[in-house]
Length: 113
Image (cartoon, rainbow, N blue to C red; front, side, top):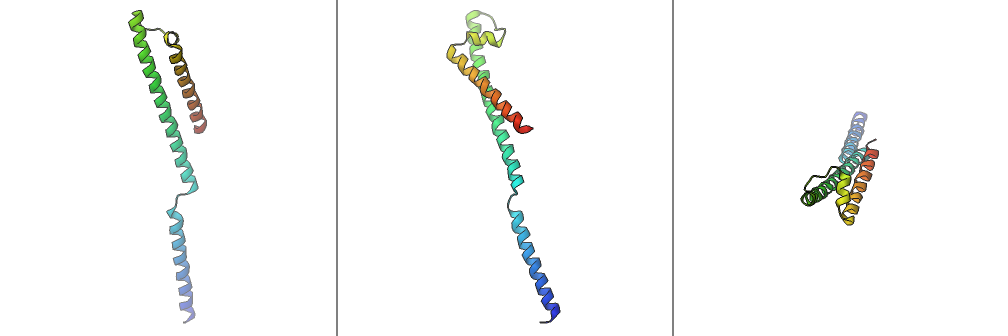
């Protein structure tokens, strides 16, 4: 083999190995990409949980507002008036949902900063 063939062979090997390494490296997700996707997923899970809690709160409000309206013949003026009308168990459950919603909102706000 001549010197030129040796250099060409070494060069081709370097190019081939470099191509394989670049292909292999780009095949797997980068840590930053994974972290960003994980943060977005966590945020979506929190938002979905907040929506679920809000739906439960609205259902409770609707249920007790209907009962209040039937019993008193009028519509409640404030949420506090409706809470006062609820049974202690329902009131505690509603306040727990409020607390949980606020905590999730704080968590979500902290993650978005």
